[in-house]
Amino acid sequence: MRILFVKLGSIGDIVHTLPALAAARKALPGADISWVAESRSSEILRENPFIDNLIEVDTRSIREGKTLDEILPDIRRQVRDLREFKFDIAIDFQGLLKSAMIAKLSGAKKRYGFTRKEMREAASRILLTKSIKTDPEMHVVRKNLQLLAGALNITVAGSETEFPIQTRPEHVSEALEIRDQAGENFAILNPAGGWVTKLWHAEKFGILADRIWEKFGMVSVVATGPAETDLAEKVRANARSGKLLLHQPSLKGFYELARMTEVYVGGDTGPTHLAIAAGAPVVGIFGPTEWWRNGSLVPEDICVERTDIACRIDCHRRTCNNWICMDITVETVLDAVSKRIESQSRNADAVR
Image (cartoon, rainbow, N blue to C red; front, side, top):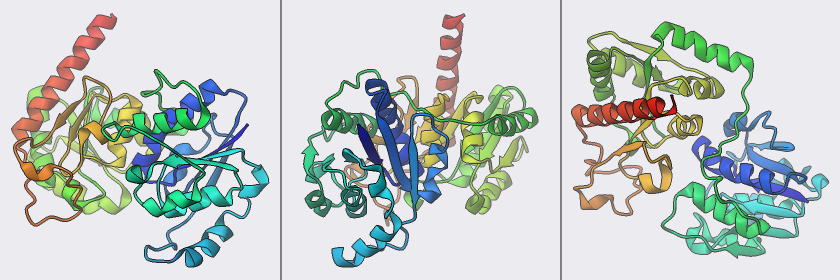
């Protein structure tokens, strides 16, 4: 059986689909599994032993507002080699018009996706052969697993926290070099996010680094991307103790670093989901999006959020003139950090 996973990006979206990949490989070890993803988000998928063919595309030129007739030639040029794989099944985990079109152009006779209500672009349903009903009040990882189970008629129980990611020795070395600078016990802070409304104030991250040093004697590693230098510098400017390090690790280097940390603190962003995949003890700071949908499935991980404001219901605003959901005190986050570190210590003692 030849199966095509269509999940283009972002990094967090891809991470949330990895358990479905693990479940498919476990249930169908002899299947040929391909994955089509955006080049800018595909690093985390490269060299994955569960993927037989990684197909990288760049759909940035496909803008919203184009008609099907305008989009089709652009996508066709990018995926002209897809038909060579002779796919039996394509599964659209993205729910967009362009992702459904890629599934259609793959030549797969059976093309599965979510129902209209669960799609980001409902018009994409016309390009699929069957919709799989999923629970709307469900974590996105479980939703993807439910879609996979319906499409392939397999059982996926116990797969929700399996995140297959393949790294190389240089990624481990990259992480070890940072750990050597920070010390054996360190925290990771990530002040970034794809939407402005997802950002906890960078100044507060700097103060949090001070408080983590004062309470636990741990240096904080502020991990950001190349385009987030100003944000990282703002964190450093507000940390009076100086007990923090600024780093821009590669995605897989960050993954290995997250496997070593005592605690990770960040918002609803790709690195947070990657830290969850790495098994890091996580404290999430969530505002316009929901922890129950996008956060960690590990019971010990903690979400810090405003539950006293009604405007967060079905929010998902990328801009807001009443942006109060991220008005969360440093002490509130520090308390969550303390609880997460304590629970991790208890788990470690129980293992011993």
